[in-house]
Length: 137
Length: 225
Image 1 (cartoon, rainbow over the protein chains, first blue to last red):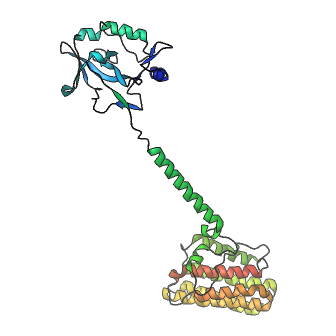
Image 2 (tube, rainbow over the protein chains, first blue to last red):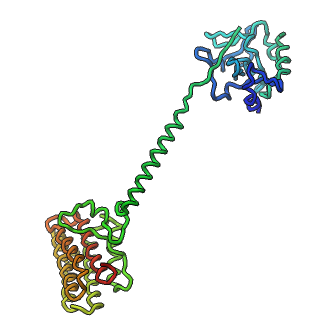
C-alpha cells in the first residue's frame, strides 16, 4: 500500500509531492526498474552498529528518491523486537565496507532502539520531521 | 557521511521479444503447414476419394500404377463389395502396421467374394467368375498356411493377377468402357508386386493393389467413372 502511494508521486521530483506533503520515497526492494548505481555497495543485509559498538539490527531495505536518484533512508529491522522496523537517515550513517557494517555515530544502542516504528506506510513530511527530531535535526 | 546513488536498471527484458519471435515462427510454420495441406489434401494423409494417397505418391511407382483411394462404401453396391471397400479403407488407415500375409489373404478372400457378388448382381459371367473366385480363395488359403515366407509374395502376386483377370472378365461381360482404365490400373498394381521380394517389404504395393481393385469395383457398381 505504502509502496503504491509513493509510486504515484515519485514523479514529483526532489522526493516530495507538494500536493500532499507525501515524500515520494520508494522501497528499493519493491522497485523493479532501479538498482544501486555501479560501484555503490549494496548495504542490505549489513549490520547496524551504534556508537557504543553494539549491533542493534540489520539493514532490510533502502528508501530511495527516484527524482534525485539517491538513497534517503535505511529501513532497519531491529534485533530487540522482531519485525519492528525503524528508519535511519543515510546521511547520518557511515559505511564500513570491510566489515559490512553501517555505523551511526553519536547515537547509542538505547537511542536507536527508541526510534519510532516504521510500519511501511506512507512517509509524510510531518513524520519525517518527527523522525529527524530523534536525531536532533 | 554516507551517500548512495541509484540508477535505472538496463533493459534486460529481451525475453518477451524472444518469446514473440518464437510465437510468430510457430504460427508461420503452422499456417504454412495447413495451407499446404489445404492445397493438396492428399499430403495430409487423409483419404480423399479418387485422389492419390500420400505414401503411394511418394513411392513413385515406376510401373505406372495410378495410386487411387476408393470410397469406403458405395450405396447400392452388394454387401460383399462394401465389405471389401471397408476392409481396404481400414488397411489404409492402419498403414504398414499389421499388413502381413494374413491381412493379404483376408483381402484376397474378401475380394473374391466381392467379385462374385458383382457378377451375380449384374448376372454376367457368373460361372467363369465363380470358378476363378474359388481359385482365388485357394491362393488365400495357401498364402495363409504357407510356412515359407519367401513364397508369400509370389502367391500374392499370382492371386492379384487372377483377381485382375476376373475384373477383366466382368468388364468384358458388360461393365462398360468406363471400367477399362481402372482394370488396367489394377493390373499394373498386381504386376508391381515383386514375387522375389519378401511380402512384408511390399506392404505399400499390396495396399495399392487392394485400392486399385477397390476403385475398379467402385466404378463397376456405378458410382465412379
